[in-house]
Amino acid sequence: DVKVTQSSRYLVKRTGEKVFLECVQDMDHENMFWYRQDPGLGLRLIYFSYDVKMKEKGDIPEGYSVSREKKERFSLILESASTNQTSMYLCASSLRLGQGKTGELFFGEGSRLTVL
Amino acid sequence: DQQVKQNSPSLSVQEGRISILNCDYTNSMFDYFLWYKKYPAEGPTFLISISSIKDKNEDGRFTVFLNKSAKHLSLHIVPSQPGDSAVYFCAAIRSGTYKYIFGTGTRLKVLA
Image (tube, rainbow over all chains, first blue to last red; front, side, top):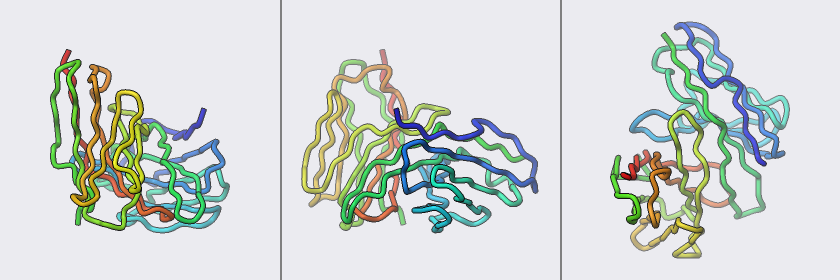
């Protein structure tokens, strides 16, 4: 059974704290993603990684950084958390298929972050 | 610019009836479309997808219809069950790229 695991389901942090959100997938997928979900805004892409040590900015990368040191692990870092980063964070992975092919995204359970 | 739109934020349907969730897109380069279901405090789970070379794809109670000329897709759930109550997201992507574009979601409530 395919699995994307996010390390923390619920976190509460203070403004200015550094926050690490960890994600591990066991499907040997090349692509990994971090999204945030907010009411009325859907899922917005923060960062994407298509290979170890490779990353690309998504639509809302400001205030975030990522790390991919191993194929199965993709970390999201909030260097200095702010209240507007209170959100549901979703990690996902997918296969890198051949040219012109696309597969589905597999999501983790999500991490609900509250910044006070 | 919202490239994928779900104009109905919520929908209520009686158990056993048909649920129809709609999604519109603006980018004609999208050629692969997906529907995800999300329960509160859980990650989205994949439901069904369709390639632009088809106009219909069916999987059990779930059918997705694609109208390329109207840039419109819909998800039909028949018969609807209370366990189908969730938020449904449609997503679109151009094959070979990584950028899945999601709609804002429709909250479906199936009434027993």
